[in-house]
Length: 104
Figure (cartoon, rainbow, N blue to C red):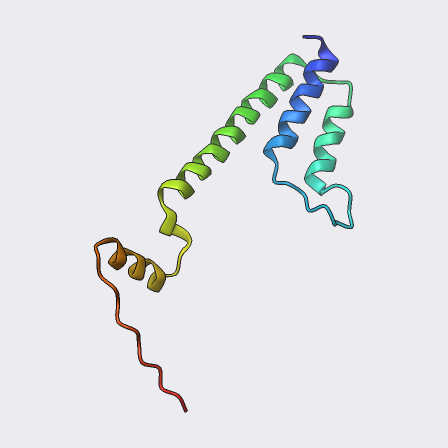
């Protein structure tokens, strides 16, 4: 792969791993996007820097997959404690009684 094509591929891989930007954003790019674009637009790229960039891309992909797996296999992680208890009780065939709330 030629040098410019490899750089373009690395840049696009970084953009894929970054969180998506909202479409109605007032700024076109975040500071991270600007810094990334600036570092790739410099023609002073070396093999060592491109190797480090590839390692960083692999790390970012692994982190994204890790978060996806944690969310998939631990669905109650982001729930409140009451909701988690209610769903745990339903899993074993019980329903929690409705709580009485005093109206004053």
